[in-house]
Length: 147
Image (cartoon, rainbow, N blue to C red; front, side, top):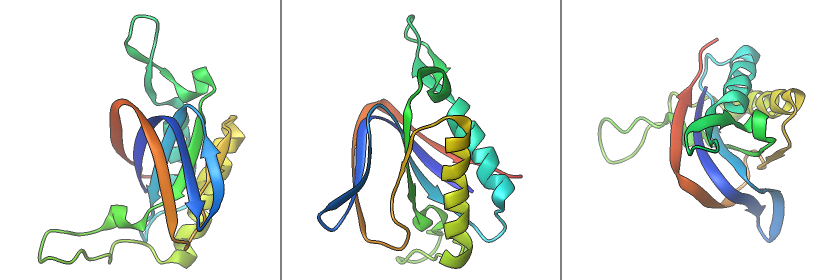
């Protein structure tokens, strides 16, 4: 499982004219699922995201986690995180899991975050989504989790 994580001041996701999820300060998490991912991957990713120390403390050091600060999470499925762009001009998505496998795992990630105490907003699987976010500093990470 892969996650592109952006520390944000705010973020929201729209489908058409409807805002289906929004958060204040926290993390915007784009999630990609591959064929071998399991619920255990989703649970491990949730724990990593919730406890990742990427927020500043009083000295300006990145020593605090979303858990410690009660920050929110916006979780959005993003199969393109498994794009293979090594050859040619068109990305291959062979490593991206089919929707029937990926959707329950993205849901499991959101549920695991909620179980840890996070307020979680989500996108809508298989929808054409418009995500707006305001970066909180130049903080974007790519996380990968194995079981």
